[in-house]
Image (cartoon, rainbow, N blue to C red; front, top):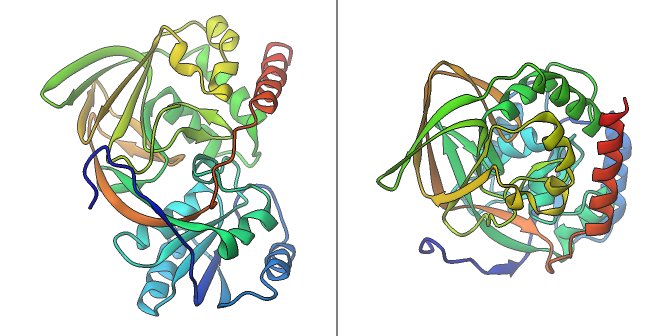
Length: 330
């Protein structure tokens, strides 16, 4: 196990046996047959054998991944969104089996945070050209998260979004604006490293990687392999001010917002005045007034690009401006 704050090296991928697990209900409607053919075209001359399985119910991806570990697979590739990646990854912790990701979900926060391409062909090609990187895993109330967990406004919006059939950024942000009008900030008490921070806040997010998903960067400096969790607080803010500063969420500049605070720790205790939901990699969970958050350092091997790619800042700004106009002029 690497010391806290020590970044890990990545090693070339060498695979002999790969399992693909596809959640056909993830994200936008896509034909499983088309996805499979696209992957097979990329892997036509792959130096490893592979097979496909489809999930049939929530939790099935975890079961299939655990069985793949027992059967000696070198990698298990999650074809789906962040929920599917979470199920698969949770079954691979502290094993030699690596997680691969073909992101076809709504947010794809883990793929984006690890710079894994969103295009199916390019993501599949990483099984031939990528490298294996070992990352940390966050925990909240004995549930694993690889991206973020959060309480407050984002957890509420995530719960409402999860109940809707529509996917994509606009439905998510429309729900956010609507709920913002009636939302009342909560008082959160955070205890970590011998200190106590009490805030009336819009939300509290604990991040392992940089973003929620959909290109929304909540913790620009988070590293998934440094042995630390980034605790991000956004204090009470008006709707008009939130919309004005919306582009900062897409350009990695949210930490310039005066209502934003960030701390780093390995564990913390969060309490609030009444029960409420939290989310785990975007999946809503009902909870009580107290939650415990921690970290499993260097717990998961993931197949990532062999080279870092520069974020498309111009595209991110353009996307944020379009969303800003759509929300202000529905």
